[in-house]
Image (cartoon, rainbow, N blue to C red):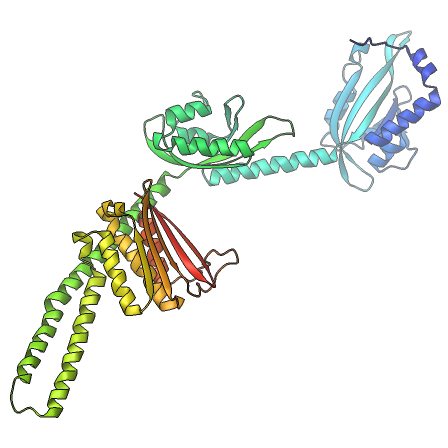
Amino acid sequence: MASVTYLSRRQTRAIWPRSESDELLHLAIEVVGFGIFDNDLKRKRTRFSPELCAILGLPVGTEMPNEEAWGLVDERDRAAFEAAANADTSSPNKCKWSVVCRVLRADNAVRWILVRGRRIYRRTANGVQPVRSMGVVLDVTHLKEAEEALRQSEARLRIAASGAALGIFEWNPATDQAVWHNDRMYEIFGHTREDGTLSQQQFVERYLHLDHAADYRAALNEAIRVEGNFHAVCRICGKTGLQRWIEIHGKFQRTASDGPLRLVGVVADITARKELEKEAKGLSERLVTLQEEERQRIAQELHDTTAQHLVAANLNLTHLRSKSGLERDHLELLDLVEGSLDKASKELRTFTYLIHPPALEGRGIVAAIGQYIDGYADRSQLEVKFRSNPKVDKLPFRMLRPLFRMVQEALANVHRHAAASHISVDLRLNANRLNLTITDNGRGIIGTAQNGQAALSQPGLGISGIRARVRQLDGDLKIRTGPHGTSIHVVLPV
């Protein structure tokens, strides 16, 4: 360990002559930006250095009586200033004093200053008495303004968090210690301040629902790795046993380049929102069920009434044809009527099948889609390639109609808008995920974004219907489109 040598004042002056010491002092004053005052307690007058004159807005070389100098201090801080400057002077051991206060410059501008003073004592006939008070003054206005801005920002944050019912927290991954900054955090978890906060381990083991634990840990670890944003939506079981949904938004950051990593974030209780979403989903499912039931009823009515009327009309025409004595014009007219009835019967059968495909219940989804695609290709004169996984037929029945309708609506969109010549439909079931991909070589969807994602500001009924059914089944829909075709990719959890 290197030895340290302490030099006396005389030895220091020998190394640094006074002129050099003065230069170093002036250099320090210039760099730091502080001013110096010299208060002669006996004469009761104060002198200001040029730097201090600049801070206070005074002419260089200003000297004034103490009372007048103290009058520069803002009246709001004058009592505190005088108390610090006139503090206990009975002992040289208490010769240092310090205060932060506001001063009023000659141009009426208010500045914040930090004053550090020191009393000089001399032995007199009346004992040891203070004779001078010297010190430095530093302009700290920018620090005070930053302090005030931070305080106002924190106040606005508290108001916003309170209005949005958000809990505010910090968490240190290294120590696994959390700080809860407002009462809302305690309310969300059913804690009192006496109960204290939760570490991350306690949160995961005691509160976090098991179904969300793996995704929560993965998101948290990734956010720590990249020191970035963290987001999680999960279900918890509070201290009272009541289950709730919460949403967490946070960001990992460091107070300094080498400071400890910490997560700063907010927590929102979204239980009410989740309940509304569940209710809306239930209503949506009920609406789709009612639609399917209405379609089935219409298909049955068409089959039992309209189709039978057409059959009866055709039989009557056959009976008329058997009558003798009909002229050639009459026979040609009968041929035209029979042709129209035949076309009407075929269209009615097609329409009935489209609104209620019986193959769904009898032969399965693959056969139903295959039969529909065959008819679609024949009617539209488009080339359609259909590929499927045999496992698809094992899907829950609740998924069959929505899946069939998605294929219907996608192919109808292609026929109406795409001007395509080739379509491929792929249906795959892998790892408890059903993937439906429908691709065409048409002209794309109008309003496409530059990145290839479909910019459907006013989507047609087909796309809207697909989205509604995807939401109904908690799935994911992606549409990519361009001048050479469109791809619709649906992923559904099984």
